[in-house]
Length: 391
Ligand code: FDA
Image 1 (cartoon, rainbow, N blue to C red):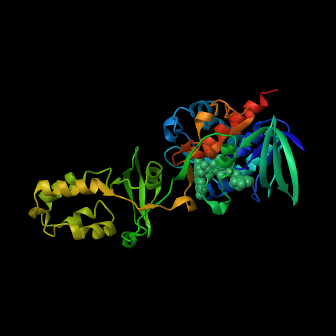
Image 2: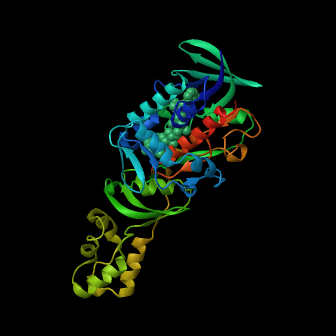
Image 3: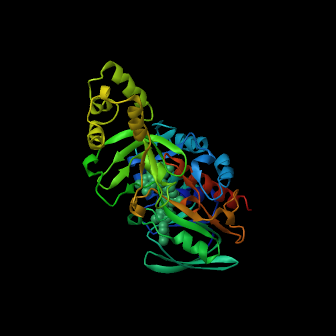
């Protein structure tokens, strides 16, 4: 069997590319259904894009690489497609667009777009070896039969290593390596932190607004204490900038100066205790947890400098996580096929005409909040339209 374009992976990026690559396109996936990560994303409502999409919301060895695709296929383009399919949506927070109904609507939309474009979809298909001798020959096992499919173009859309239970594998990296494309070492991103001791067990379930920084920007979102460590959107965001052994810094009260609040309370309610006043600004369980380290005297018994010092510690709480939950729960994989090997307009490998890489398999990783899907749509569209324009 010969096709013009063979796409490995029927996830977000692969389906988007298939909808645009033109005739004689075959998409294959080892899963039983396409777009499984779309289906479970955003708590079942799919945070499908972010209105604040900009290159600085993405992590990559080359921060300029994503600019071209993101500017040519934008959140507005994808939202127009969603609208054209009659899928109701809303902005939840921070520019994040979610379906009002179900993420399954986005999967169905992409299936419809692929069908409209005439693309074939083979599920439950095992990908074997790849040979390149002008065309690409890929051994596939589909419906119990081994077939060699030849293709003029091969698109690597098999995603990253996050959540192996959902079928994630290193297929895209392996094939890239076979073709001598460099791969930036993959690591889990958007992932909870763990601590080897059970220090946060008494706080499990407590959440509060925070500002969290690892070795990158500060994220003003919620932190959640868990039995094993720290989670919540601010923590997940910071985790993508963290490397083993590094400290993270938490501001436990980003909106209110605790120093000012304590000094004001000392003047008007000096006989009250630190814990009483701080419980007005922080969850009572967290105050109880931290209070054994604090002086037990009333506010009036403490100098302003001592109050400021204590408040400073709450605004700059430094912790060194032991590690992360790893690929088991990571929402994305950082690193991947090095963008230096790819054309940023088309996603084609510079040294291997006809070989493309898109989506999470590439070393472009978005923040939490719809950015990763936008990269999948934009890069999938860039590769698909480049192939369709070949004739
Ligand atoms: P994706 O992983 O979607 O697709 C790869 C496909 O390749 C899969 O269908 C897989 O089965 C297939 N495949 C892999 N190995 C194979 C092999 N060896 N043989 C055959 N097929 C193979 N992002 C966002 O923007 N908003 C959100 O709300 C969320 N929510 C979210 C929740 C959870 C729980 C996770 C894990 C992730 C998210 N994400 C997200 C991230 C988002 O899902 C992710 O970035 C995109 O799905 C990436 O799209 P790709 O098409 O590149 O890979």
